[in-house]
Length: 554
Image 1 (cartoon, one colour):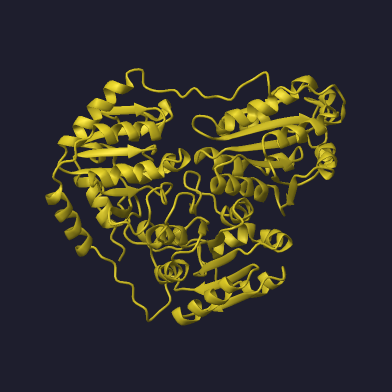
Image 2 (spheres, one colour):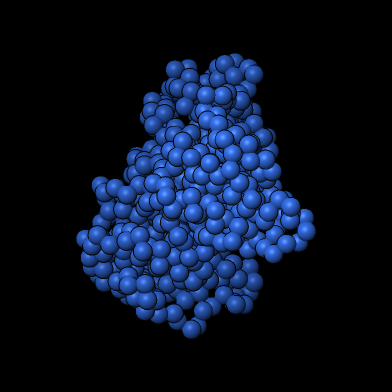
């Protein structure tokens, strides 16, 4: 078979049923091979959309997402999507075409060193120089992407490698999947030490990060938290790791975390951190964040231990196993005084959402009301709407809230929603985006229409780059340089260009009616929620401040 046919055969062996991509000169042999296969190829409008769609597919399903691009600009257009997957530990395999092997290094048409470009933003990458090694490389790429701490892998395949023929060898019987999980050499002793610290704690709290979702450890986390009656907060990436609406969940912590969640972290004596890398937006000032606390850090990646915040008890290994061992070892203490203080803080910092004018928090509350009890996946873009969604949506299960956290890539939302909807067709995807982000990748509405996906896009329209404007409001003397978008875009007309029905809303009643109608339709829909330009995301931790120091928004 040809190298291209070998790639397709390898994809099928990996259980791949959907790929996202864009054809070009150097990957035409691969597309020709796909033409005869059972794999569903989704033609996106742009290669960045293909990478984000593969990412969304992987986040929603827990499987490896696959994207394809040609050489040169096709390959470089994947970079933002690969960086997004890398920062958020998402398993993606990107297969790029490359110029013929005898032209590599000669500045041929559309030649680019994509393995060199993507080295910092992939777990590993391959340039295939020997067709006989192609099956092994495909096998290793998927193994690397999904094992340990997940992440993206790129395979660059020259055109002649795709076109040449050879005797395909099934390597499935030669190699076995990675089952070895790196763990602390004295892990049992460390678990005993951690259990003792948790048992003796007067003010413990669990911080659930994105690694908890990657490890499929949500059920184990819930069981442990309930057994010990521990308060739980999540990072942005950890939303959904613990069920929304649960009495032990205090909400998101960090830069725009809820005050009660931030205060419980600030006042805690023991932090049990599951799969978080202590990002600067989670910790604020790291010295004050860790002061007076015993930090127990559970993570699959030893490189994350002590990187940003020193841990008194690092527990490196498989999270389900570690939480199970802690469940058996911890002796729950009397936390009644701690819970009384927490409930008082919640009461004092309860947010009241007025209903006389349409706001993003009001939209999120209405989404909770109308989708409660339904199978729904929320996919957000990046900006103010993302923080409002993180603060107010009640996400009931892991993989129910997909967002670009580490890279913060505007334009992520819509193509990621495409991938998520294809991955989990029995769940409805609700895509939440700002007017700025939709302008970046909004043409992927064409992909939504072609695939006839029932995605509902909710556009939080404030006629500005809201988060940039907010930073200028707080720190640049209210000088709104290039953050206001005075020429209003007709999003309804834009959606209609792709034959997608759309509604513009200016009140809660209008939005409620529009969303209910969109939910009843089986096809795609878009709803514009017009809100005030000067609405700000509150609270906001002061730069370099501790978890109880907030920016004055006046």
